[in-house]
Length: 290
Image (tube, rainbow, N blue to C red; front, side, top):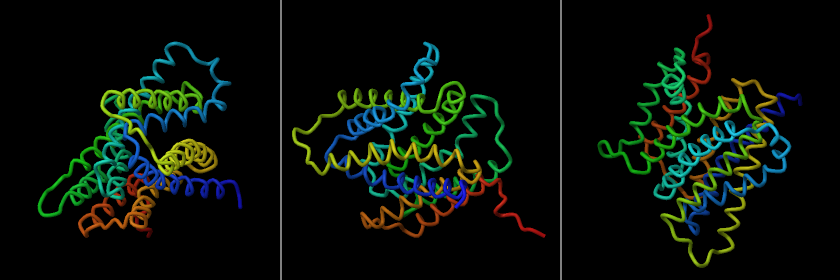
């Protein structure tokens, strides 16, 4: 097995961990307040990355710290909207596909912020993705649930963070930047929890077990594996492999919670996946060879 094949398998395992992260989080917030869960999770994750990041601290200055903190604040808002959506939604698989739309929203944000015009594949993918989102909302007529809207808000915030973070990553070591942003997310989420939530007096050991799995496996380990995979894999292939996350989430949600998707919702998920693949491959997978 060559280096690229190893990287491919690492990325596939990363998407499985990401899918498991949805289950871990849903289980953990059965006993922990959602915002408090995010705060503790990302503080623990940042502490896990600190030993690998501390050697880069001498590269920091006030401007870079403020920019990294700003990126962390956007990530915090994205994750707070995500965990709130999970807490009020009964369909994790559907939510995962909605959140995956963030990749198609990225070019819109880049166009608005940096005047980077979207490529041609974007304009062909967007109507397909919007049609898929509409199908997810069709039950008996048009019926967008609040969970769907919060997942969509999360997709927009993740797209904004992706654009900002791509610029910051050119100025700071990735591990250091991630450590700062995870720490910022943890602090903001805990502050939100103190303002809006109350921690229960007793938390079962099983809940702390789900929390540990979420913080260590689905956050810290997942990030390290994704970094290793991306280093050894062609960027286009890596991007395509990462589309497996919502598929894993659907499979795991069906297996764990017995989640059932209606025909409309299955079609909606399929359309979103089609749009994402079309966009990520610039339509190459759908071109007929002569």
